Length: 419
Image (cartoon, rainbow, N blue to C red; front, side, top):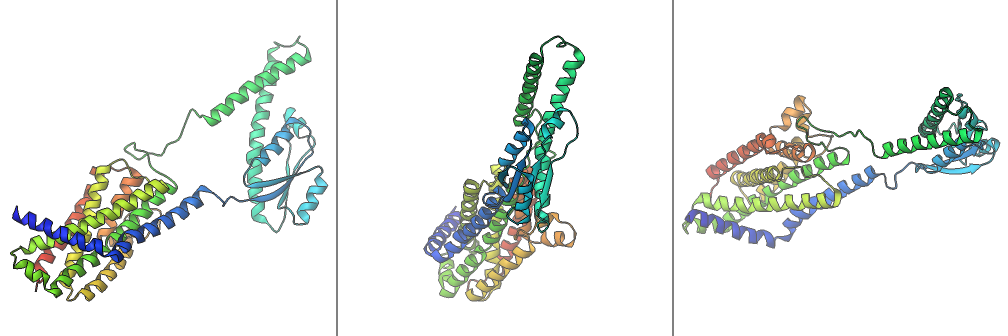
């Protein structure tokens, strides 16, 4: 009980010292928050398509006076990627493209509706500037999508007319009655198709082998970006822990603590607990902001998230104590800590260079990353957030992190000199 009380006393004193060091707190808390929200926010904006839509100026000459020509021209005006200008003749449309005022001209032929009604192949002409090959492919792709919608309407209309004619049910009805019934039937079918398009009977959902929904798109990127930044900056606490221990040794404070009397293990454990608390606050702050502001997924297992965070805090703090045991002065410990932070971050995959953690790349790189605690922490966070892994799935990574921490701590207690 006395040892526990002494440990907590040391931890409390260390926390007070950390709170007064606002410069270190800014580096450990605000810098990762700033970088994470900057990179994450930029990618969210790019992914959302805001202010990044391809805007092509096109001119449309609708020579058709039928319903299908009107529908096609109206559909083109609703497409965000196009800025549409209507003209009355195909000659005027071609001249505007030739003058470089528009990227492309779309010409709907005069018999467009008649051909569709007669179930006869027809063609919509797209004239593009030869100096803009990219625009040609984009406009052509958009037109294919628009025409496919019109084609569906034509196919259904032809099918309705064929069924009514073959059945002979309306053979004695006046032409206007036949047209009215055909139009009513066509409208009912198309209304049903539109409803199915908006509320499909069959939906697609990405799942893993366990049946859990798998995140996609920008969510996957955020589930990798923020854990990478979190793990990298968590190990910045190594310098804080090491310089604190060596600074107190140089000032003679540790000698007085031992004379109190207080065990060496309690002193180091107290420093360790304070550093762990700082890392936990760092992780909680970064993940909370990323989740609330950017929509980063947190997974479905809060317990797994907490235990990975505790294991990360433990190994980062233990490494700080180990650096203090190996360094001779506080200045040397600070330099060594910064070097370790960046080297381990690069080797361990704390820089998001691909769509998944480096531990999953295979080959030499995948093996190399696994010798660092960084790689296992990033992989565990990614599994929880992006793949909805539970505690059981990330227990191997947690165990490896704890093993790293125990080894670092035991070596530190053995090698550290209090005088």
